Structure formats: structure tokens, C-alpha cells
Image (cartoon, rainbow, N blue to C red; front, top):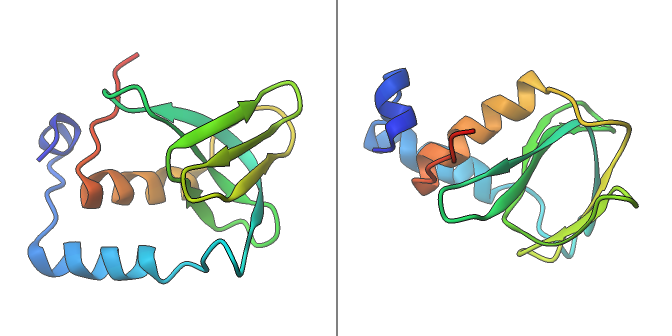
Length: 117
């Protein structure tokens, strides 16, 4: 359990952990969806120094949290993640309620501890 989940009282039961993992893994693979555009995006950092894109998809506004970023060109608003997917970042950084929800699930499932700012 991470400090965030302790503070927020959000520890997933084994059933919910399995369900969330299945839902995350059900997302289209990189071969099927090599690029995604995000709006209301931001970059999150974990305590290991990994960075992640979090935001809403521009096509259906669903929340999205990436795998760790391996290449990022902030001036071009584009980056590639460990999965090989390329993210296009539309507009300025922002806040996505849907993206934050997905990010909270990803953190819980993969036991990611978010860095404190």
C-alpha cells in the first residue's frame, strides 16, 4: 500500500485489483493504437523519477495514464512511452478529472508511489 492510498483510504481488495488490472490490460495495444492525443494533460512523477502522461483522450474524453515516458519533446508537445506509444499533447497543461481517476487506479494496481511536490 502506498502512502497516498493510506492517506486516501484507498486500498484495493484482491478482487478489485484483479478487475482493474484486467481493464487496464484490455486497453488497445500499441500495434492497434500507436498514437493518442491528450487534452487537459499533465505530467506526473513517481518516487523513482519516472514520468507519466495523464489526461483525457481528445477523441472521446476518456481518462488516460501512460506507461513511463522514455522520450519527451515539450516544445513539440509530443512524447513516447515505454510501451512505444506516441502521445500528442493538445493545448497547454491542464487538469483532467477522468485522467486523475485512471491515474489513481494505475498507482494502486502497480503500486506506484507518486512523488510529493
